[in-house]
Amino acid sequence: MLAEIQLDMFSNAQADGNGNELILMRTQRMKAHGGPRDMELALARIQLEPHDGQWMWSVSINSSNGSGCGYRALPKWGKFDSTRHGALIKAADELRALLDRLTEQERMHVTNWLGGILATHNP
Image (cartoon, rainbow, N blue to C red; front, side, top):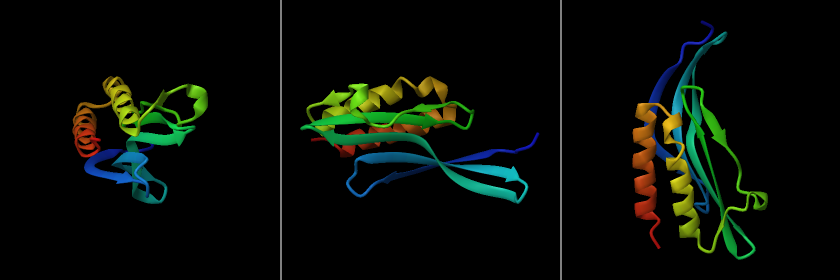
């Protein structure tokens, strides 16, 4: 096997300066030519962006099991809500629909993370 992967989950979340990009990070240890290296990768991401008086959202996941999917918040996807909080709720629902692609440990971390986000971002 070329790479040995050790996954450590952290409950740390990151946000951009205006709080429109919410990211749950994970650490992945890669064993490669230069020796073991830890890399920070986004396990789950929610992006909220204003557009013409409405809010767009997007989600993405990147699991240690190799499963990943996602997109950026762009008008062409047609994902709009009249409020930022409404867009956040829809993004959380969309992420919940992707939980089956994650490992059991990752599911727990993402579920707890979403609960914390929704509790702190109440209107």
